Image 1 (cartoon, one colour):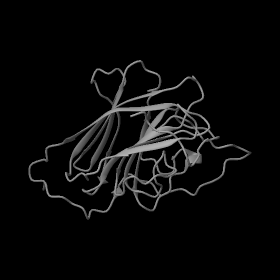
Image 2 (cartoon, rainbow, N blue to C red):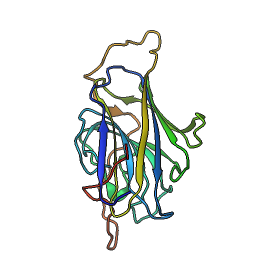
Image 3 (cartoon, rainbow, N blue to C red):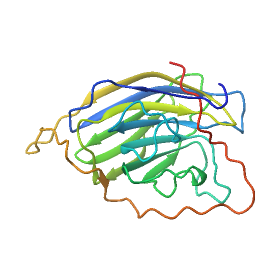
Length: 231
């Protein structure tokens, strides 16, 4: 629970299966009730172990990111509260806009109040037949509550799973307790072959909007160096 720290953990072997599920057991705790940050992210990415400004990992990545953002940087009105979990699919050309909390490239999301539980909490990221589903379990009872489902998400095989986290002017402790990965059955008639040449895309993605500065002076809590997970 320190300011301006970052860190990450990645697997060394790429994922070669087309359908998979990752279950993440985690805890996010802090000493403050109202001011905390910044959050953590799950990655399915072409490149591994590249630090950067997006919750401890690189911007303009290729692949999928599930972002658990605990602090609202946006001065203007939001249609949701934080902590907020969202998805971003990137072919290497999109930039994550911290000042707008990624709303310009967000595909789906939900509010998840996962801080300061006395027990571990869980996320489940399921990718099956080009459908991405995110669920959570805040009561540690393996009873999954839905967050969002997105169809038409194209991801190649051969990318790496990873986790990263960051703090800025504010802090939290981000604990990754365990990560479990599962290969899912392939539907009859669907090829099980690898597809490393598929172009990363999402049919529900909107055209990126131009970044606009918020009016008035502000101080961002996002710093290039930040703090990860106690592992």
